[in-house]
Length: 406
Ligand code: SF4
Ligand code: SF4
Image 1 (cartoon, rainbow, N blue to C red):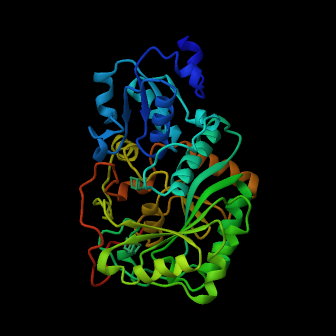
Image 2 (cartoon, rainbow, N blue to C red; image 1 turned 90 degrees about the vertical axis):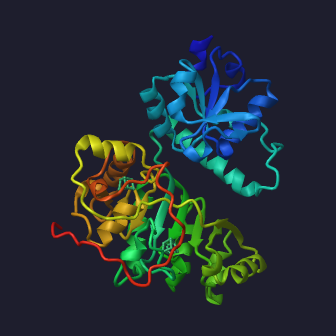
C-alpha cells in the first residue's frame, strides 16, 4: 500500500494507508488546515514540523511542532504532508534528511474546508494563505506553468522612517529616489509577459506611499489578469491622498500595515480611512526582527556560501527593482547602493531578450542555485538569527563601503 501513497498528490483514502508516522511540514495556516482535515477523517497525525525555531516544541491543536533537526532521531521513517508554499525547498530539505515519502497539500482541493475552525482570525487572510500554497504546489507538480508565488515590486528607495536594522537596507540610502513609472512599467510588463501568473504582487519601498504616483502602479497591476492580488506594505505614517483612493478600492488590493507603535503616527487614521473606503487592511505588529542588515565582503568559500543560503529565510523573496528581478531584497538593494560587484548571476535582466528567453531565464533563476555571488556581502538571514529590537531609528544614513568593482 505504501507505494501507491507516494504519488506526491495523495488522497485522504491513500493517507489512511500510511503505515509510518505521518507528519505535517509547516505549522502555518495550510499545515493547520491539513491537521484539521486529517482529524475530521480519522487520520492520526504524529506531529508537525516547522523551520522556525520559535515554534519548536510548541503545541498546535494538541500536536507537537518539531524542528527538522529533531526528526531523524525521533522518526527514522516518516511520511510528510507538506503545508508550506515553497514546496521545492521542503522536498529538497526532506531528501537531505533522508526522507523520500511526501505529498503536496492538494488533497485540500477536494475537501470541504469552509467549516474549519480558525477562531477569531481573519478568514479571508487564511483562505489567501491556503490558496497560495495550493497554487504553488500545483505549479511544482506542473512544471510547464510558470507561476510566481510572490514578487516584491519596489517603487521607491525613500522611507518616512529610517530603521537602523531595516532588512531592505533603507538606512543606507544617502539620496533615495522614486522609480520612474516608465522604468517600473518596463520591468513589470516584461516580467508579466514571460510568466503565467503571480499570486501576490507586494508593493513596497521603503514606504510606497512616499511615491506620489504609486496608485498608477497599483492600477497597472490590478488591470493585468495574471496578477491575483496587490498588497501595499505601509508603515502607518502616511495617509493616501484622495485622488489615489479609486485605484486602491480595487477588489484585488489590500493594505498590510506594520504597527511600529508611536512611530506609526497615522495608524489609527489610516485604518479608519481604509475602512470608510471599504478597502481591506490588516495591521500586524512590527516585531520578530533579526540582525541581517550589515553589508560587507566576507570572502566565504563556496561551501560557506551554500550553507548561509540553505538556511536563508529570504532566498525566495523575489524583488523587482526597475528592470532587474532579484531573488532577495538584500541583493536588490545592495546592488542599488552599489555596495556589491555587479554580477549577472545575481539577477534576471528583464531589459534583455524576448519573453520566451525571459521565461527560461526566470524559470532557471527561481529553481536552481545554491547561492548567489551577492550572498558573500550579506550577514545571512536564517530562521534562527539574533533577535534585534524593531524599528530603532537612525538619525542619519548609515555609512557603508561602496564597491569599486562595478
Ligand atoms: S519602515 Fe523601517 S523597516 Fe520599513 S522600509 Fe522603512 S526603514 Fe525599512
Ligand atoms: S544575500 Fe543570500 S543569504 Fe543574504 S538574504 Fe539574500 S539569499 Fe539570503
